[in-house]
Image 1 (cartoon, one colour):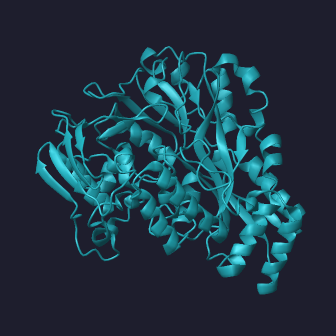
Image 2 (cartoon, one colour):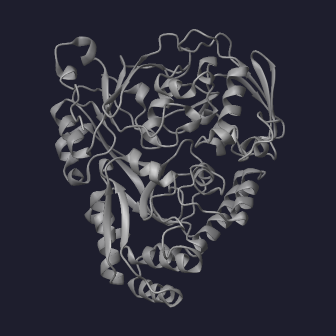
Image 3 (cartoon, helix red, strand yellow):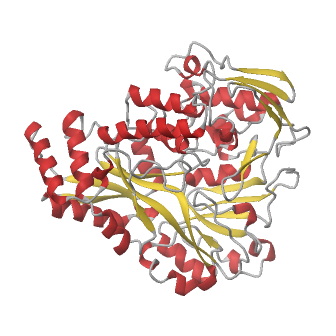
Length: 518
């Protein structure tokens, strides 16, 4: 794909273009609509264009943004007052209705938005989110006046207020509801940047929003999200000064990038993970046999060796389903030994699965070729092949969008890599998005009513410690079920060009884009 796409402009004498910060990206899966953006190529753009009730700093700490007041005495009933005179980039005013209409639209089952699960705690969600909705709006949302609305939750929620800076909770202008598909191609936001253009599979350009009054103003002249087919090409552009900020150093350069970049090299433990998923529609991966197969595969993978040989130590073997940087993390849950390399036990468990139904065919593990995953997927399938003696092969898919479309449509038909990058720093954000039975972001189709109940109980817990206990119980069941195969937690490896004086990395592995200075 266009790897240096018009990047000649960035290194030319055109001072307007030269002052824009260029950073790596990929083609978003969908239009730039907050409630239908559940992947980070679209998310990194959406979060620049919109402002919510809360905002998060580079360490993940939440601050009031559009909220003037968020009042509650029981974490169940909320009265929210927004700041006055905040505008969308089309000049219309952001009102309480802008929030309520956006949330109802995102929750509506017939719209099928990928982030609809985020509204689960709100009273009336179930009726609105049903396959055949019995209501069009959530009963728990009421507009009081132009600047005030109330939210009634089904149960008290320990996470709700923290989540209010997360993309699904952004407001939308009236124009969005006239043609949401057209809006996704040319979004109108209220955040620190305004949309300029989207050249599909090439680049997205944003400019600072001069009217933005919030707490994360742009310290640069604009952003260009450049879509690369490989991190190797992006890294070459970074070294040549044709790319300003790269959030993922290719695996081929992990042993040299610190020497290559010097003080422009960036590392930081982040709230990101990597998994291998298998949907139950794949032959041999349903029911008890499927659980045994995934258990055997997990123990057949030598994660520490892959971390050392492929990632030069810049990953951490996973021991549960979230990320080790999150509050309440517990890497020693009952059953977590299934994530340890154990060839003898792996063979034994694989044989138990064969007793149910003899293995046939080959194990394919899909990955997107534009994401820098080839080396670790090849190492993973080789570990499986050598341990279990089966035919295991990588299955490259050209683009991130292509693999996500197949996963979401449940048509991928093979194992696949996927990951999660935190939207706000809590374990429940990771778990509810990926493993709630009704979440549109549930890539593997995991469905356990007992786990759903424990998630709900954790959200309603009276304090964090009690929530962490309930989350541990839920994850213990998920380990027993082998919801999927956790692989790694991340230690970000990134870099900036010599044209950039500051490029801070945020808690979730993305740049703190507003604070990139050139």
